[in-house]
Length: 68
Image (cartoon, rainbow, N blue to C red; front, top):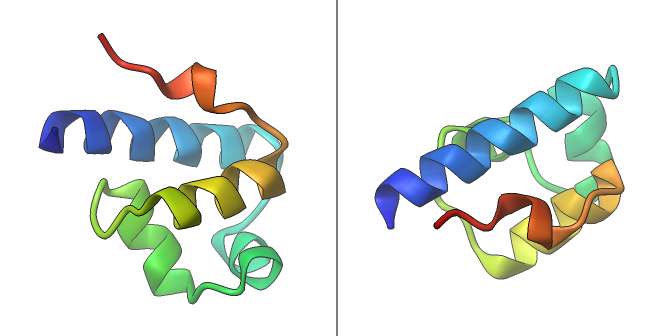
């Protein structure tokens, strides 16, 4: 599970970067701190609620992060 969290976190980071969004901008949109965004991108402290908010902000779907 920890490895999956890291893969998902990295995918979120790459999606954010591809969209030209900073951690600060994503934090403002989601209501999280920049540190929380950083931790999630590192695969730490991830919850379904935080993932939902971040995916909404990045306009991506959960199916993009299913890891076999």
